[in-house]
Length: 333
Image (spheres, rainbow, N blue to C red):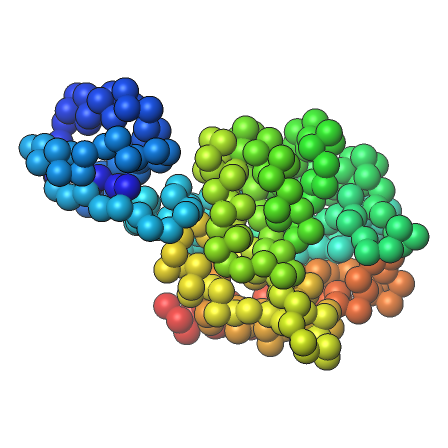
């Protein structure tokens, strides 16, 4: 349920109303928009008399929200959420390019890649320290040493960093990480999501390879309901009957999610296609579709990469892609 307050409502009147609602054991989420203030009522709202609430002098209207996701819902917050990390903004007209290798391999490799993507115009450095792999025999990442090397690359270039957290017990290692990534396989690890909701760090939440958009939004709801409002959604391809590409990139997710939620939406064309030659056209399509950012894998030597070399761009290819993206964004504006 949402209550839209009339223009000119004083802070004292608003606080009095909120206190009354909370006495009915209803949590209240406050959204201050450019035009109106919206109170989102979360929990068991059956005790709230809609007619009584709508009759109050300061209330413009009252509506029930039928969707199961509440705080994520654009009805609760009509203005786009802007997530800030390390001086970079994502959402609300702010576009971010996230780039870097799939895995951190050596100090020389990650610092070289970091400098290369920065020179080509990247805003945020990505790099995997903990790697969820299908095979237990595949490279699992450098783990704590990988975080340490990412921080060295951050110090060398000034780029904020994003890397994936697989287990909440490793959270203390992420103290200086700017954005925590939740991978596709952990999208419905609800215990992990709840704990991340207690942090103050931006969370990039990837859609599971077999999950619906509503399930993605419900996972984001787990994070936000625990207190963390800084959530970025990421479409990285879903599993279909098509086998030519690694996954099927669902670009329709961009406008649909923007319709349903106020959270920023980022596209990962690298994991979606699995083939480096397909990354630039799909990244360009993502920009044209209205994405708030892209996440691209870039490696200095893709042929010898320890992880996902086939879908990684070289620094030169990434620089060309970023120029192309800039032209598309200019044309859209």
